[in-house]
Image 1 (cartoon, one colour):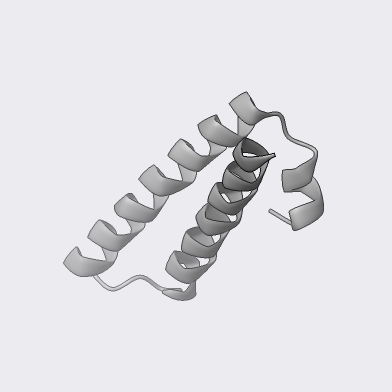
Image 2 (image 1 turned 120 degrees about the horizontal axis):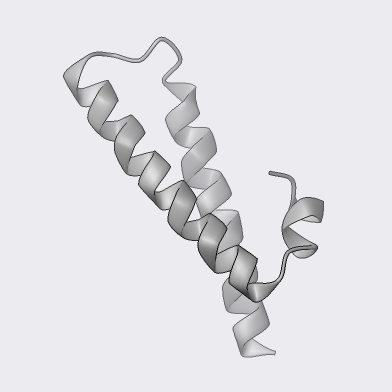
Length: 63
């Protein structure tokens, strides 16, 4: 997800997407531990997207 797309989401949608990406990150890590992924950069992409979502959520809470 791009930052522009993230900024257009509501707080409820941000929370839902964050939970979804955190679960996806955990699943990818487990799958990579068992058998190496074909593209391990997926893990980094998902982790960074989750961080962007968390940052936007925190920013909105502080306003």
